[in-house]
Length: 270
Image (cartoon, rainbow, N blue to C red; front, side, top):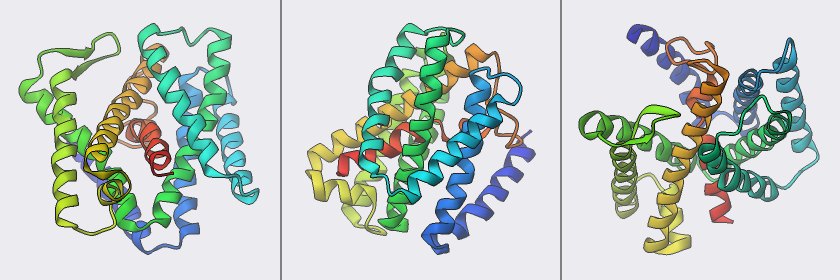
């Protein structure tokens, strides 16, 4: 299992590492769009669409993404709609756990999913136009939160964060992930390493105090995104969103925390 995870990770890095800094924006956007379409397919599967339903849903998401580009749809309204979903519907679902089989809730999530994926794609491309360091540091926030949560949870985890949804997550882990982001972000901002990063841009626009709050908010929503996908998987009765990435599960399993963080981060910067 570990060998499979490592091989898959190496292949993914071999694709992403050269493309992120060197490929034109169009090629970078096409790659991310490809990823988003597969994530939409998994979203449709988790919502229990029948037959070719998940494929059709993925195709619709891809077409909406393409048309939004050609029509020049502004990114900010998309970020706002996605943020509203994560601020209201995300926590609501985690607290109330509405049944996915309910037609109204499923229809809402199908529509919301397209908005979420569209906003995520625009946010990644927008971040890339601000510089390679910026987009990598934005991704780093989620990676640090995840890594910090893993090790802190393993060492200190005692109090379950959401036992009915994801029994392995703890409050100690979440705090450890937050500390990892704050410490590394603070060091990166203070040293000015590889600027402009999300950390330096936050401080430039918001000041140190509000940048601290903004990073804390992003870490919190990375947890919301992770738990929300866990809820969908639990209700769908599956362990992973798919088997597309051997040893890692599906695409959604890798980007669930990014879905809320990316648009909310760009929205904070205006």
